[in-house]
Length: 602
Image (cartoon, rainbow, N blue to C red; front, side, top):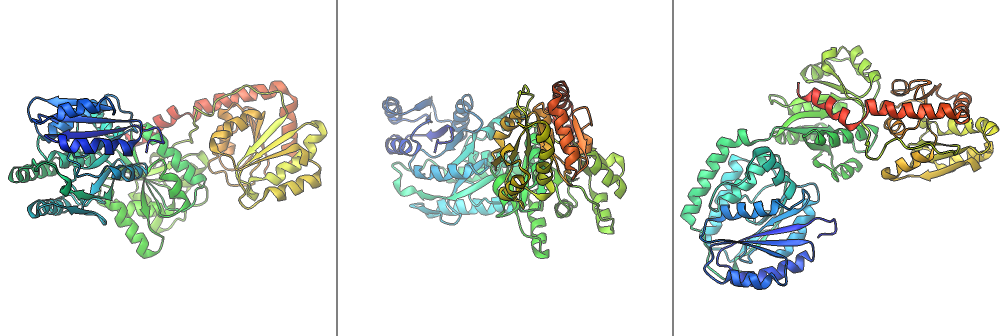
């Protein structure tokens, strides 16, 4: 459970539970193994709880907090959370469970696994499929069932069947964020209704919730229940009314939903992911609506909460619209990254206060039909990463005041200027695709080799349409195979090291390059770029300043520029410095966040 370096805090509110704690604490230790802390908050027990815990502290990692008099479950949870939050990291886990051993400790591993899937709260539910109650009296069952119905009718929160379960696991960072924004913990009530209050306030705040089935073992109780049913029912009813009244003021409307209705991870998806990462740094909560069971959702859900969309048939489109619409309670903005995503976002947000922006990180004409005109009229604006794409919208008829320029961003913690080496190495980083011009670059080496015999070319990228074998066969025919090193598909984290080996980056594309992330990364590493005059490269690369621009598909011109840059060391050094300076002036996270906030704060 702790293989990822997270610490688990187990909060046990206890009142006269000495017999149960004797069994529960060793069972918890068996499940947690290491890197844990059990926090027992003794709410005025009259039995020997204190003596038992004192003995356990010699063997287990336990913190013991005692109230002289019984103050109720809510105050016990508040005291325990206050103790835990002083030391917990944002990705640590907080488990709150009953101390009477009715909640099975072995369920913690399953709950933690769900929390790792970008969830904020995982509830052990008696009512979801696989859950049940053992040894619970009829009136207690009826109360829990009735509470479920009432809460479902009034609040109708997706994915929840058990609102009153006291067995949950929370991401510590969620409660820390709530405390930071609200100035108080999300629990004020004194009685058992505090469990509902804690859950609903965090949901209003934007928490992503999941349930796992719970088999509640009331047959293992050693002492009678402390719940006064009439008092508890009244407390729950008052709490429901309060939450209903306060829902609007408690709801955090700082969310951005990014819709990207494609199944594959592309340059467009990469731009969307960057928007998500740096929007979070700007203080926004991010959700992604992505095609379910796809390559893209598998990658995105590692870092973001995701909403799984259906296919593109008319029926599935309608289902996706309804699913998105149900998820917009906390959403202030929608970023739509494709044409179909744009339609989904506009349709789902009709008659809501959510603003929809069309984000376009691809070139190509926009069909000027009545359908597209209406969609863009309903949108708050369009966001573009490059000037060429901005011109596409201007030609379509969008007014400048509705076009927002948001250049790409580079991870400056990993991509930063590094000293040039004395080698004669150049590199190209990107998928092996005909449009990327690898063949043209290899042809240019025949010219370069005549002037610089020790020239080396590093090629990094996975095969997509063109194989390494095909390129190497061409290199052998041209007599430059010994000058090329193929790296294959590389991990993103190794790219800065590859770029540091090179004295210049090459982008030999024959077309495309609507948004060239790799051009920005080369410059951020302090490397001049020799690039084709396509897409955004004509904007990012200033000829004879931070690199050279060459005609696409022209190996001779490309070769001449490589020779010039490598043979004239002073030129190489000056361009390298200017490339790093240009990246620092245009593509840093700080600049990106500032530009993003200008758009969203209007």
